[in-house]
Image (tube, rainbow, N blue to C red):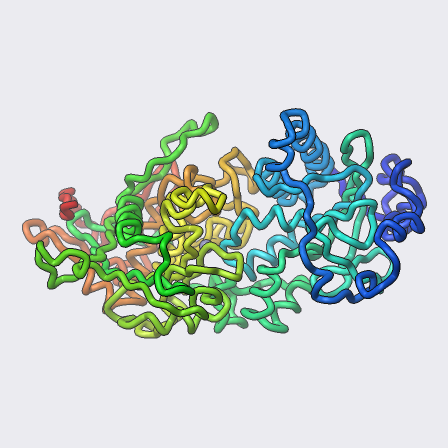
Length: 584
Ligand SMILES: [Zn+2]
């Protein structure tokens, strides 16, 4: 275990000087290395005190500076690119020695290889949030678009430890000793360690809230959560709600529902299949969005079905010693209209392009702009693709166990940056392709069918109310092995935030929970979707909901290694005949 280097801790004395221990903010002004310059020199570098150097700054001051990125370094040559990576590695090592900065170390690792990863100068100060601060952040921002973490670093790194971030954004200076200005209030600071860049030190600080949020996330939080959300950023709060459950702000996310006793949920009969009538709506800010075609949307629907049938392709890693969970959920997503004839062509598919600038830009922070395109909330599973997202979010969805069936808010929202093949087909836009396979829609549909994140509740065993997923402290953005809660993190599960190539499938109990939630909370759509193989209908067991509501004392808990094979209610032996109902 590594001790956190607190300002008042004697353990820090070997790392930094006593003057630094007394006042972290003082360090920003007085204890720079040889080329850091005096405070006066650094002020002079920033120019004469005109409107651009006022404490508050003007909107123009917030223009992002033209800092160098890894892409620039790669153009300059291999040595520059290697120096970029070495700088990140050194800083990451310093962060990694602090137990409560484990997620910030993960974020640094993720940002290192991004094209937009900002070059770090030696002789600066970096402010990284504690794990608790990250946990708060993820409660407010569902599925943040990961490449924006590069911008977060640029907002959190201060060359020469001056008041101006690498991004060009200026920090107000009215905070007391031991604090710096964060999102919109003073943030407590602890010195955490020292990294080295080109022979110069980088002072790393742990903060109890974020210092450098990208503007899209700031605006998203302010719009979606208002003063309540800002309050969360300012003050740690326990038992917060899921970020998509805005209307349930005073109710813990993982409130118990009819399907919470996951170890008692019955097996889904092999004779049953849910073929969900699905509608895709694309909100665009221009009449026609040239980057999205109907074929891409049909391909996305096929990909979702493939994922829910347990047929996803994924990258097997060296640390994958066991067969990964990849169950057949017996769920398919059907874009074809029921009254379709073989020659109907594109009219056959429930795909709609709508020009709606508010929806295209703000659907994640103003869900009503997406909900107004949910024409049949009882009879259709609707996904709105957000064409010009300004929230910095990949996707959001409402939980059916929290929103009454028939409510138009029961709509899945997915950024086109998460639409299958959008980023890789539009190479001129130079977009990140890690979330390009189409798994964002699979993940968000998982929420819309009742699943929580695998990191819900942190290391709490029942955080996601699914017994056969290992708990994990915080989300993962890469495909490396971690053991954040004692067992391997479920980085391959669709309900984590891993890159699409990493995601492999759902577990058996996630399947049972989805069937239970769907039947109990969206019964109209459930029964419209349900297909039963006639020849074997007699062997079908009781519906999941009925069995789950019963107290079956003594039923064994389900684990990864030993799936539940308990007999059905009454002890009768069930015969499950696996029948492939769907024809592609
Ligand atoms: Zn999610």
